[in-house]
Image (cartoon, rainbow, N blue to C red; front, side):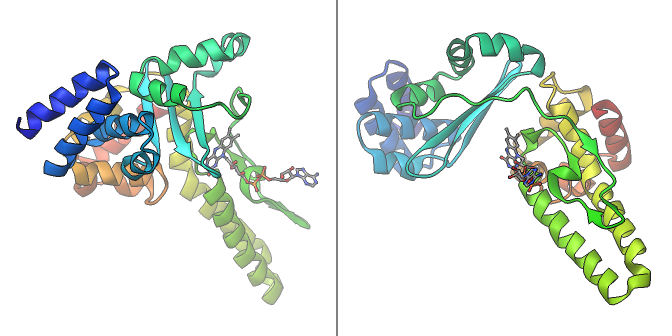
Length: 276
Ligand SMILES: Cc1cc2nc3c(=O)[nH]c(=O)nc-3n(C[C@H](O)[C@H](O)[C@H](O)COP(=O)(O)OP(=O)(O)OC[C@H]3O[C@@H](n4cnc5c(N)ncnc54)[C@H](O)[C@@H]3O)c2cc1C
């Protein structure tokens, strides 16, 4: 059996829930050529379900995320061998989800059977905790005798998960502005105003992107085109994920070199117009 056949066979065994055999076949295929993320996930699940917990952890990608019809869900290891399982729905569905959380979660996870199998194989340690979303806002972050950092200064839906690093960046920038004000009192107002301007310039593109993403609506045409362009382009995909996680500015990603766009300005213009 060559490795392509082995992978097909492994998937079929996995589908049939023949975990031990699926583990053996997929592990063998992985030795010949590294499995892709989805097959690696199957291997990790099969390993887990036959009690090979260490091997499961070794081949498990640290986090997973699935986007399905109007919902997104995934898991991530936390502490004490626990895993967070999170599910996002559009805010409009909040009341319906709260009416029967377990059924709603089960229906959502059912759209990614491999992930659902992993969740079912675990033991629930806590109640579900939920929020109907958070309001987005920008506040003036300083005045006479006071200043704001973090969520107090501006906020956006947590779907892009950057609030913690943003709060640290704010704290660093505000400290510098205050230090300037203390050493040169005449410059205090200008330093604080510069703090606000720099914050707004830095976070505004991601704020707008996040506001759109949090609606969990199908992406607008330019974004669909962008996702199409990312397919099979690992460097651009890496750059996109870096932008989404805040490792590089979103604007930097929207450059010809990184996104593979034919016309950077046109793509950017259309992207933000649609995203608003
Ligand atoms: C569901 C959800 C998921 C999130 N996931 C992520 C994620 O994965 N990654 C990420 O980076 N960000 C995430 N965020 C956002 C992140 O939690 C916040 O952006 C971040 O915690 C902001 O830090 P902060 O210090 O500004 O505010 P907070 O963390 O809210 O801290 C403010 C503190 O001040 C206290 N406080 C309030 N009023 C008073 C008072 N009058 N006197 C004394 N104390 C007071 C509060 O109790 C609180 O402890 C998430 C947010 C939510 C809601």
